[in-house]
Length: 470
Image (cartoon, rainbow, N blue to C red; front, side, top):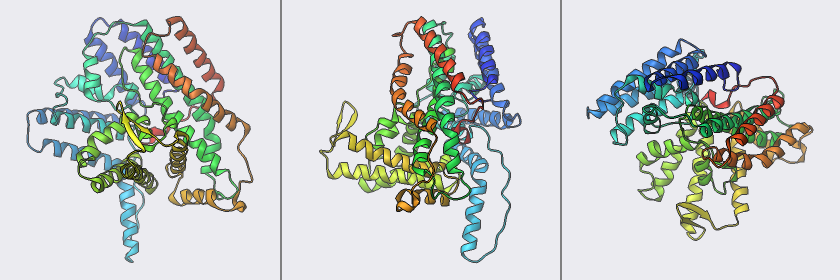
């Protein structure tokens, strides 16, 4: 069930009506739980069994870890990782095995196993792992009510593609019978329509041209690959920023706050800053449950560099079972190492002021270097194969014979220009929706105009959100 679909709007409207009319916190919780189960089962009902099995399994092991049962954390996390690998990486592992045998001259053939990837399995597993680890680290307590624990995992605004929530962010809010706040409710509508606007106007508007280039069947020579790469960078940002904003807005309609996921990543002047602004909840998860357990930056420069590369390589693998994603992650890890190495050799280039790293080189240069790297590496993220990615890169560095003979449509450039002009003010507007700085009447007007613009700018075809694939 897509956020940008009529079915979702109907489910959301009915859930809101029942939620705010519920006489007790118990029935509010049940309303959210039933709505969330319907939301997940709508896509493929049989996988609801898998979802509930993972919830029950983690609930039981959470209680065992709280009782300090030996090896419970290791066993439970291992089980969750195995489940993720079975559904997401089986064919990838078999393909690597086949290629390895081919190298040594052994013939091995297999047909890819038809495995339907459960919606949101990567995000679900990450949330379950963080829950178990936080119990072990005494950062949270195990939830005794299995109904509330299932609701934490299933809460439909963030269920499929995040933001990744921690139990101490959500469950305490489920325990409260929150009063209706009109500022917050209309603010949620503004966030919901802002995300819809980003999705149907920018992400879906750029998608046809981007897809026509990256899915080309006759090679990439003479194609405007540079513009397609820039277009994809804007498309994936608006797609996921739009989804995350709709998730935050939908939750806010119920009086529930979930963390934001983006904060203007394309104004970053370093890759380190980019990852503090892009997919914030994933970045925090990777830092807390991968980078720091590996040793973080506590064991010398060489070990720190190794930890960064391993962490980002695993981040790439998490995004997809493909060498493209692994290379994308490793390149980000290597660039982070280079940044850290430069700041180590030249300590006067960077200083930390009030907890923020400031670059004392000319900021536009830092921005240009960082964005060039980010948008070039997006090619590995979007290309269908590694061969395609290398071919596209080749068109960006070869002589004039490879200059594009076709150009993007005018609408493509209009959308890019509109994104540059709009995205910072739109982000400021979203931030204001978490306060009461803007009057209710103006909030209502803004939400209405954003909804109208979304309808007018929509192509009429609801495209799946990109991160649903992960």
